[in-house]
Figure 1: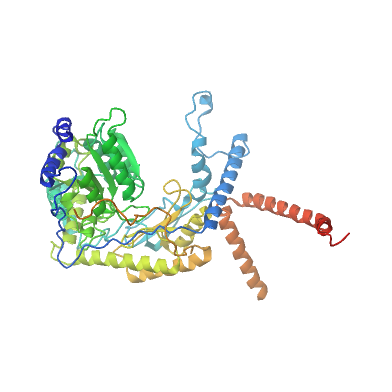
Figure 2: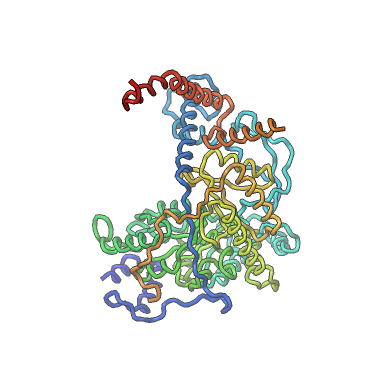
Length: 555
Length: 68
């Protein structure tokens, strides 16, 4: 029987124990469920009903746009080959790293051709990234002006600052990146008492009382039993997934998962299978195949099946289909790892993330992960869930054992941000910010759609990708926006598919209506000037959920 | 006045052409090379058309027996 095998092979891992309890309560016989209520509504106040998730839009651009995009890349690649030829022959100085004369006969250290893209495409428009900022990254910030004399190989600062640039790129969803003295009183007090450096890991002498306070607060905020905080969000994913799964386990990860999740999955040594983005049919088919066929050669049962998804996908702005995934998870007895890096604090009526948005009980998700970098204005990540899980991670996770503990002022910033959102500090500031963010998001998205731009993602997600497609327009857009004193983040290949370069806006609760209006007006003018309004209001080409589903949602 | 407007419109069209063909990313001398190549090819096509069009039209009319 599968149950006894599982018990045997994962002795000591707490995930098994909690699942045992769940299994007994479900009492499955021959695949039919007893008709009992498994889903409970979340803890939110009775006023906010769980939202019906709007559809994600992935509108397709007209055919000529795709053709012109490929043509543009083709021309630049041809010129790239031409320039490489000139550099090889010696007509042109090579700015890249090269070996010394004495070492020319050795095995080559620098792989020339692999950096083709970087050398010939990225460098030409490199001035749109890594811009030096000389102020707090709040709703407006100051950018240092820099110019290049040799087409972006080297830069020099002119000494002038471009002031009051509207910030549409920072992950400042609730506006906690601020230097208001009143709000930061406790942080200053904490620095005065504890200093800044911790000089030890959590396991040795670095476990301060503030860390314990933070973890209790995070668990209370999310509505789960226990939580653990780590110093770096990326490291939370990449160092903890290897502790949870290993060889002989199966990871089903979404197509568009973040690099940290992919790295953690690869480091763990488990088998990874990728399902199409947000496509529940694809996921169910894979679950069925996995359970029927088992491991590849031996056909033994998988030790664990872990489904890895994100709350909001940062490049698309789409929301996860949480109720469907929970139903699938229960039916096929898999575990769920939910990465709420962008959605914690940013969605949900009181800012508790996607679990509250959909009205599901956070205790149903096995591993809740999130970061403090985005909505809380600090640095670090957390993993939350059942007490046995978190206690296991405290001793078995690389990040917990080897990484230096979080710095006290940063911890205090997170504590005060969480208290503000929960309303514990006695003001309604936190709730005002959550509502302001939702309002700003809806306003920006609806106006951009009206204007005729192609916007991806769900209507409630504060990440707004605006599609640019053509490589020439990517550079032109970013530079023109900076000239109008708006700072945006543009992304191209390889972070996105090659035909879908985009500008990604991150709405903040600290943006006022005037700022958003200025941004919208500039986008309107620029859209007409550069011709970016491709939308024809057509439906998407990515396969959506069919009308017929073969799992019961409310069993 | 009309000339200034026409010049502005033409320069906007050139800007669009440069954006769409990704010449915007290239250095000025590379743009010159590409534009010269394009103009050369277009000029050769127009010249060929000019030289051979009468012959082609006569051949078509002969085929449809409009002219002997």
